[in-house]
Image (cartoon, rainbow, N blue to C red):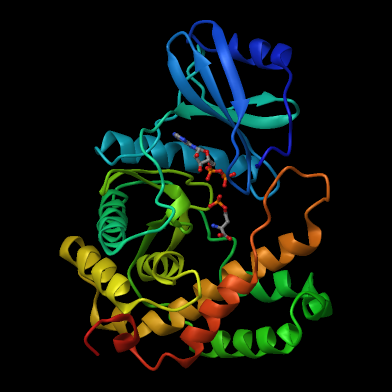
Length: 321
Ligand SMILES: Nc1ncnc2c1ncn2[C@@H]1O[C@H](COP(=O)(O)OP(=O)(O)O)[C@@H](O)[C@H]1O
Ligand SMILES: N[C@@H](CCOP(=O)(O)O)C(=O)O
């Protein structure tokens, strides 16, 4: 359960006075998530998600995230809509943290994603990539190639205490990524964390995308690479080409990938796997013992990294070479 900052009922009632959503009926911490503290708040006017922004979210980035959700929702893309306070602003403070409320999205995330879920997620990601075309906000990706080595150095040889040999393997992967990373590909605002737990479904159908707090400007194909990692490996870390082919096919029906994007896919997948391995490794070592959160295992993205290290070309993902 990700609640790093707990709140009292008194603090919450005081905070809610800045909205026009009626009386507080109930609230509870949400037993999921990793980055921020989330609460479901039941008010007279309905249910809302209250987020207290924690360590990886800079307060100055909040207008970018809030503006992006507003922009996407206005375009008809299914995502939470930020809730305005009486004074027209969205971001307030609660228990010493920046805080905001968004609308509650119906649906559940798929615990065991099927081929159909992968296709739906691919199409949704492509729709988002089209819908951001006229979003004016800009945010540099704070977790891309130049940031990975410094992040790794904060872990250093402690990596070997978590997984034997990991320090050397990671350094070799970073060397490879620094030599091969593509730059000249179509870019725009990407979600950057389109994992199954951020994609909601009603039955087999996509019902909405949440958690835009890693969103940033970067390569669209990198976003696809994140999703291939997150959706297409099974519990035993085997890559499922049927799922990746379904995801890529559905994505391309909405936004075709260029030849250069397709060629770059193995490198982008290696990078995406490395990025999640590094943040999980960092959190594995640095998360305070008393934080109410289920830490994510760096072994999983390490297995993804190894699959992509051996991938020779787009064929490894079910794409025609
Ligand atoms: N708008 C929303 N509607 C419904 N549930 C939500 C919404 N936002 C978050 N949640 C719930 O909160 C959980 C954690 O949210 P998430 O944004 O992924 O947290 P974190 O940023 O901490 O990783 C989700 O898995 C979901 O159950
Ligand atoms: N998706 C990341 C963790 C970020 O957590 P989220 O709950 O914000 O998706 C990972 O799997 O490492």
